[in-house]
Amino acid sequence: MKRFLKKFLMSVIISLYSTHIVFAADSLKINLSDAVGLALKNNRSIEQAKDDRESARWNLSAIRRESGPRLSWSSNANKIGGKYYGDRRERHYFYENIPEEVLEYNDILLREFPSYQTEFSNTLNLSMPIYSGGRLESQRKAAEYNLSSADLILENSRQQIKFQTTRALYQVLQYQNLMNVRQEEMKNLSEHLETVKIQYEVGTVAMSDFLATNVQLANSQQNYNSAQINFENAVATLNNLLGLPVDTNLIISEKLSYSPFDEDENFCLEYALSHRPDGIAAAYAAKSSEESINSAKAGTRPNVSANVNGFFSGEGVFKADHDRERWSAGLQISWNIFDNNVTSAQIHQAKSAQKKAESQAQEQLETIRLEVHNAYTSLRISEKNVKLSEEAIKQAQEQYLISKIRYEEGVDTNLNVMTSQEKLTQAQTNYFSALYTYNTSRAQLEKAMGIPIKIDAEIYRKAIDEGKNSRRALEIAAVK
Image 1 (cartoon, one colour):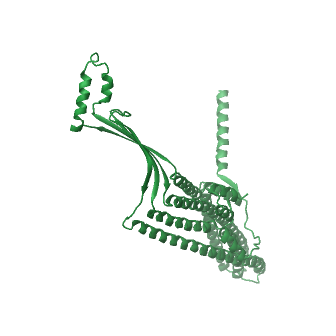
Image 2 (cartoon, helix red, strand yellow):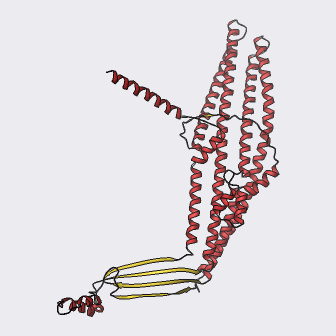
Image 3 (tube, rainbow, N blue to C red):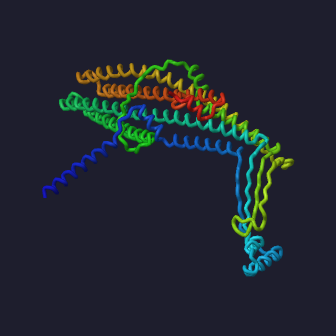
């Protein structure tokens, strides 16, 4: 019995301890750097961009191998008959029915004259392109540009996820601060309500003061509830970006604060034009389209390939008793002399696609300029608002304390006290909103400038222009 109780108690303790561990796993303490790291590791958009990059890599591999040798084998199995095979079949039956002691080598003759009931034929072909009119070379260059574009789009996806994660984390802090503002407002109104209640009971203020303060407190509670809903939704959004369950309790060790940004707009724009990975990727897409034109033009030129062929057929799968082995080796030349202008249409189609790609590349540069300008302008305006609202809070706090003391002394109205409280709440809300806008604008500006995460896009581009392949360029451009 004691042993049973001992085991039971131990199982209960282990169960409680395990439950504690599960509950503890539902909470996660993170800072901004941790959040960005989790998002880069778990976010679906990053995975999809990696898959696109792998697809581009294997497409280049497939195109490169098209210029190498190819060996193929084909085999046919058929039931055969008819007058053509009649004489041969009769000879087979003749030799088949002669006793072995009469014709000593009838088995050899049987092999020489098969029954011709079935036929298995085998063909081997070894071919290698020698000249494709530039088609293979253009396709290879286009595939290389597409792979480089995929590398840069992957980096752009990382930068976008970093911005989205930063903005989402700041949004959580923003609503957390607004909840604190509303809590302070409720605390102040609750204390003021007690003062109003005392003065009402002694007959120094009217019932309307007590009712108005109660209504204001109820409104403040509703505003707090709204901020709490926004906070919980913001946490769920951040968890989704991090690849965590949406109900994970995040303990964020960051705070919204102000730190100066010293660079001017011209510097930010010049940096963006040389570092934005999506801008360089758009330029590579235009170059890939240009190579598609050259590939289409190859249809007007001859194609030359080397070929080696072998053939045999027989009564069995790999026999050659129907047709002796034969082979041939040489060159095959083909030239599309007239294709009813199909190639010409394909060339014009490729030129239209290339023109569109160039336009998209220019449009991307215009988008970069606009994004840098908007983010920089928002940064500077919100920077001014941070300083203005910080000073406004001090004045609003002083005004609230004055009106509160004056009301307690009976020389001010309840309306002035609540108005002062509203202005204090508004000043605090404006301050945290300005901080949020400033920090998110700064994160947006970093995204617009193309601040590297894994690879420096400008260094990558230079390595590709120098003739390095994608793998080597990634190594050179890796952020240390």
